[in-house]
Length: 435
Picture 1 (cartoon, one colour):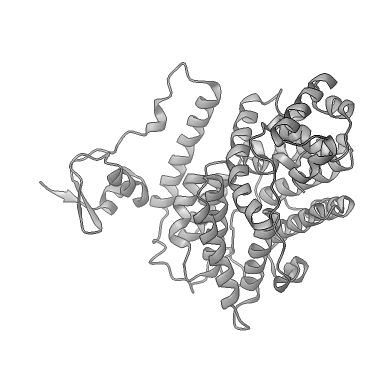
Picture 2: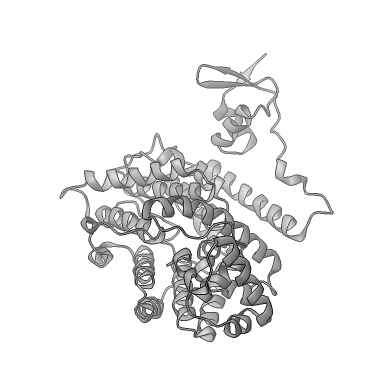
């Protein structure tokens, strides 16, 4: 029998080598044989059927929408990783100038740093000329659209890459993707890699790479609600060295830090100023800036302004299915998702809540042991939302009006929360809620 390699099979079937390798390890290719670390595949073998395309006519609307979307993503990935691929991460010349780069150096988180009109994210990725930059951008796309497994698979080989922009991008995406997948050791591995990269930098390291590394390290602390080590300094120190998209995201992190410190006016001032001064739309940072503005306004009980920012974030995110940020921030949005999206976008809302459960479970496994602050677990998203608002001083009447439910329903949920947490009074809720 004649055989072909994984690379040859990938080219024949129009998929990435990673997927061809996975098909072998999952036993989905008849006759495939492993020799040492390599697979030999029968030359007449056919590409295994995509398991996700088995949704029947009776499947839910959400399932059909998700399956259709994944079909588009698979097609785009094949196009990016085969038709346009000029080499693998292992063969890439890290020192070579990259088209669209900053000063001949690759830009970290390239999709985050790319402006596009809502709905044109994939088109923007396809236009990226550098193969490795495209791969990272594709991983960003998968992560921000709630497909953490795909994002993790793509960036894994870049975790120790010699190019710092690729390595730092991979570590950040790998850390958060595996947080959502409840693979905490992998998240910690990626965070440790970032710290090691920061320690290894010196005066010969380009300023833009030092800025990336510091922002990624600080961002991990801010977004996980962990203390920021004093040795890392302030995000403000690195803003001038960052490209526009990354700078906007750094401002989001600064606004988030102000929110955690209870400085809601400062939080809103940073985020709204960043949005107002940037004449070009960078969708990913814009989504996060609108969400942190929502967080600030909801804590000032200014629901109308909070709603306006949430709707603006949704208007930018929905055309490209970028729902991950909404799931990440659910607990801090004070019921705005329930109040704004649940009725008009029920299928998307269900997907966001699924992301919320998986992301928050992983988040707590990092946050709780590292801080000693035991954020409540095992509450439904509605219970958690009501408990958050109650802990921040909202009355039952205010909570009910905000969420569109009766005061008695609010009372029922709070009683359930107090019982589950084993605490006697409403005032004790604060110790179990997000700060």
